[in-house]
Image (cartoon, rainbow, N blue to C red; front, side, top):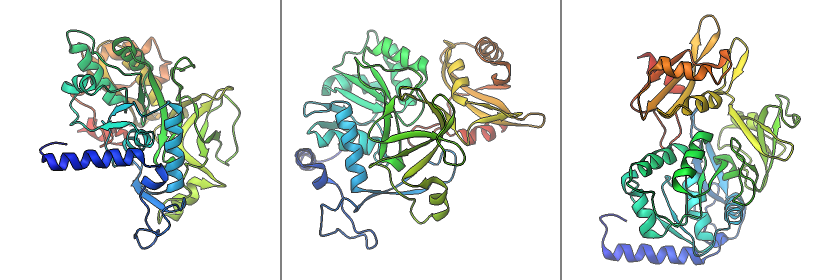
Length: 390
């Protein structure tokens, strides 16, 4: 709370304690599907709980009706998977209009009687806040982790903290960032995979001592996951397909959008729009969004792979790769980077040449002071070509 009265602060604290002690079924919002009024049966698992919009990074945002049963399922999976308990304290750094902050940070923590701290997020003070509040975990998108890592490296000594783990979700976590973060912060960084249509989490790497597999988003948590071909048929292990999920946390439609519903939902399965592959032991590797893969003369290129190559250069702090229109090849690889040292576009292109096949190397590298991101910290790839062309 900021600039509020002592009475308001006390009331907020009492509300948090009350919410922490309630069961999730009692604490969640209950409204009638059509009238928007509270329903008499507060225990109805089919009651509408939230209307949230998709992030719209590759298409127009869609409205997702999340029901009580979806929230309860997702919240329980998160709490159990990370062993959350009443002594846990989390820092809320994600916005609460999105399932990442609302479900993973707030609801999962309060469902186990833990404490949620809502500071004014500033990288310059974050590590002091973690220490002063005794935070035991937090979750954020990779761009926030990168900013916090930069701040930690600026400090005269490594940040002191009681973090038992840190979670990354809502965008791909580059392996190089994962390693640099753990080397500096000395806490396990766990990558998860979530979407609004699944009331957030669908898979996660486990906490130590179980295997956290770099470059993957872990194994299914509370849902079934399978990559599908264009005809909704599962593809073999190790082959690329569009990731589909089904389970108690997954919604069954978009609101007032029958065309989008018909394209994405069938027989309980939801097609996520992500291309990925499952290992024989169930670890999921994401290749990219269907609409973000770069098609160079028929060769499909993952932007994540090119970004990993760029980020492996010590002067690169951030990188984003996008499809660039090209008369000869249809599309070429374009890249924008933010530097934390000295490097030229030519040097970065040469760096990629040692790590990528020729057709995957960036045809254009542009250095920017910052990379455009949406309100939840996701890179807005569809805007990058127009931005560079200005």
